[in-house]
Length: 350
Image 1 (cartoon, one colour):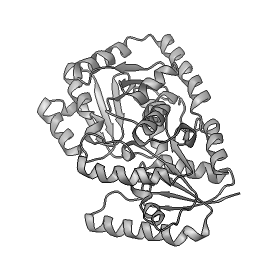
Image 2 (cartoon, one colour):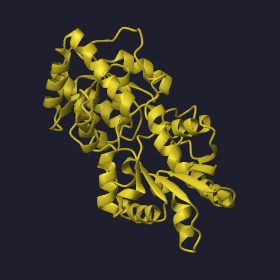
Image 3 (cartoon, helix red, strand yellow):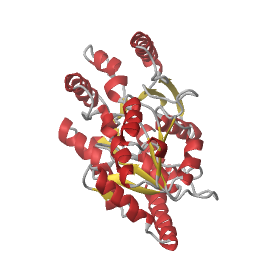
């Protein structure tokens, strides 16, 4: 069996329990499957510029020092984590690499510098070219990587980032708050959390819990005050997965008006816990529709269509809701259960 080094510039810690948690899930699944796997990771995203520079310098040096001792390198977030391999490739050092792309890795997201992305794109282009295999979270992202980076389909593995652990993400015997909405994820511009907040103006009886952190948090707090809905909105820090399970079981509907997702694991986890979901019209989410998930897709990124969709979800009868939950769970078991999806990754890494 290959001796594997997992590399990622996002990995959770006690202080940041949601920071790249899917990478930890994959690591733990492989460890539990008796893979000989070690890791070099960055697990803190709240650093000053100088501290971040030092952190990444140590990160890159650790990678370089360990190269002679491993047969295979499994690298997450290629635009950052692959930099040492990209540089070494120009002097002929090209170890076996399986790269795993995520979200803004390969795609320019709203709110990020276009000039910085030009540099990132060149790194990614080289990184993908020197990778033995490329793992992507969804079929829509596979298509995107093929079109934008000229990667052949036979070089790509579609694997949903660890999948969903159905022993953990499940229905619990707790009472659901019927008029509680939720969002969990990064608070950045491309997530469009402001649309949910604006939709509350037409939903005075509803409350929203926003789980996560990011550079838009203060602006979103100010927006709640400006719109007079601050009593309807509660901002919560990032949660561990065990905390998220309880939260998914508490909320009625998860709202995700994102501009772009490579997979959208959060809505799938929420559905596994019985929550309804209202999603934006993007390829990763329409892929869920193609799989026959019962989800609500909102075509316009405006508050009014979202408030309308939320109210429509409230009109679903209890018996119908039970059927929807079981229907969605059946699809998750077949397509996203971690025990099912891990097999394809193991075949690549073995």
